[in-house]
Length: 326
Image 1 (cartoon, rainbow, N blue to C red):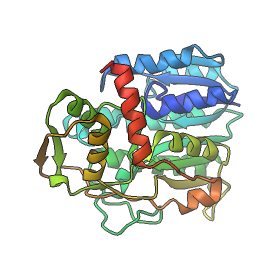
Image 2: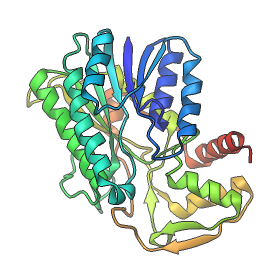
Image 3: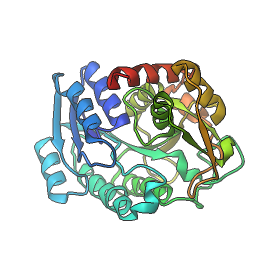
């Protein structure tokens, strides 16, 4: 099996590409290496991958029509796609909305369009987000819940991506699965995420911004659990549903909702430093709580997260201190 991994220099894409290579798969990887966060970290991830056999990398934007058409023409052997590339971040979508339109909308259509022409295509897996649930108060979030009231442009583009996936599954009989990720964290993570910034600032003795006065809960999901789940999903393409489309939708979360202040307490314990907290009001586009119902993912492809924050956060902090030599 040859798998196309988009966003391979990103956090989740990197871990998936590495796991595929370790399992003896061929990986065709793309990433545009944009500067949304430090490019040196993205290149360091790629360095970890490039030393392994079976890895081919292209610096390419998924919205580049000619580039994507050439890629699939050069690699007709691709049988699976893990589409992790996206313009990420809820708050940044308030600052630069056009970046989300270009990558998450235009790029999504471009990728689906070229992939539907792959003769050996077996399964297309799309990284969606728990953000699509908006400000729902009934928990846990189920894939059966309505998602027509997104509270950020980022969430809107992710829900749009799901709908595009369904359309292509229906029109072209291409098996597609959308996975809604819930606050993924761990080694080689994203510097724009709260756990990364908290760790950085606590170690540096700087104050951390905690929104909604700390009254927030998240379904924190460790990267190793996510990686295992996605690869199990890749091997389980959906069959035609009642609407005659081979499409499926799942939550990928830890199936527990952690208090943000408890999360910070683990960082304090592991770093041996007390956090200086600057409590802030809720930010536009943010939500108070997330909590994933993962029963269907357990039943259909054996997704079974096992890592809590008491284990996962220390693993991240150890990696962080080693990587930054701090």
